[in-house]
Image (cartoon, rainbow, N blue to C red):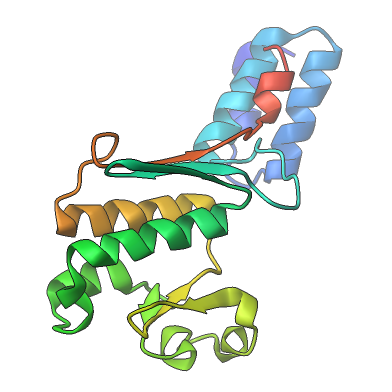
Length: 187
């Protein structure tokens, strides 16, 4: 198949992630590397993160905050540790709730922080019944843990913006050993 026709097929918005992955796989099997690259680029654009290998378990994570650095066996524990440190910089965000608090604490469908699990998971009350989805913080607020690692990082960045902490200078977040299938596929 010529590359122009293949490109049209790949860019058809009705193609699913599985369709595109199969097209890429077929192109690779036939030695059509340019075709496979076109399919991969479409996957990257339409389905970000499509090629992340899900390891199903703990995600070791290294974090730092000011002069302290720690390595955790799970991203969840690293996230909690950083959140607790961010709170010490500006604890008033949780006593004098205002637009700054809402900027990093409020999500579209559920909150990232709340005074109770039920208030945090306002549109998903079943999540409030599972204690793995949240943790009570020392300031008596709750933190939502039902998040992807990229969501955790985004919340940390918003919190840092409010507290004026600079990424890589004042704090860091590094998920260790994250593999992507693109590292395995030699395109």
